[in-house]
Image (cartoon, rainbow, N blue to C red; front, side, top):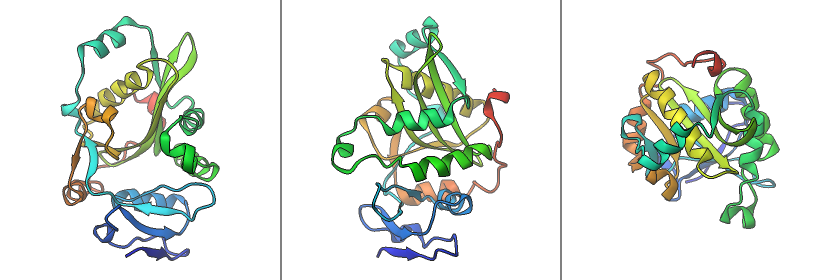
Length: 230
């Protein structure tokens, strides 16, 4: 059953009631309270321009437990070479816009889901210290990165991009290091991809994922500009 959300109430139905493809609800808005509530419930927005806001709860869910990160020898060599510099929370909106322009098969048909309304919403979260970007630079130029939302001991990854080989992977390495240093439980990658699988991410049942989320309110969110935390 697909639910229509109450525009005046930021709550969601039980994520276990999503359709087989993961679609749970439509409507609502992209306000900060609704987005926070969505992620706490294992739900995320995904839609294109001209469509209603669509809310998803996938089964299975692709996640990376930081200790399971697959750090290949070739990637270690790239990181240790010093070819790239990684910074945190310096160009959040620019990272989102680069991610919006990544060429993906589905985008040729449906367009990007990183619409102006999505950018506005996540920039608001960033200004509140809840959304973060990990950025890769080469000779001072932004050439890769990723962004996502942090709540409690979880990082909810949204998208990544690169314009130079391995640049997004180098940003991901820094994210994993950060998550390990601050005792994050998992990195949510949403959907299974070959790229994420190569880094150690794996699909888990939605029921298991939702059990993991029970810890979200037991741990304080590491809120603020993460460049000041390191």
